[in-house]
Length: 153
Image (cartoon, rainbow, N blue to C red; front, side, top):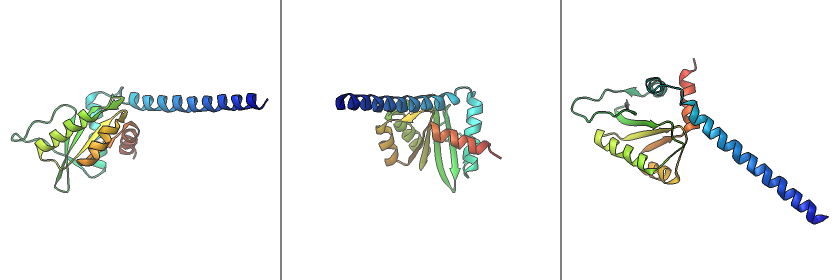
């Protein structure tokens, strides 16, 4: 009898854990998909406004500097230049290669800091690397909150 109760309890615990994992996974997917409906230009405008609300000013890349790529925004705040990479807004998980590419873009523009935006999450390697080189990672949930605050009156 005790064995049956123990097995039943174990089955319930496993069921609860599986349900929590599935709910968490579906929430992450929903955040990534929430950006899918926006056109590139609308998404860029929303990101630009969100950074403006935080005191950053978008700057145009001058002729002497390397051109900003599609999916990249250059900002300035208090005489400091930042590069924002938002090409991974549809990605489920962004790896270290993308963060290293942002670091190279920062070096090419003489930027001190950078922001990597993603619709999903970042790998552990990407997170560790970003922490060592002045790059702030903004995952899907944080990005959604950031854009939501920018739209709020």
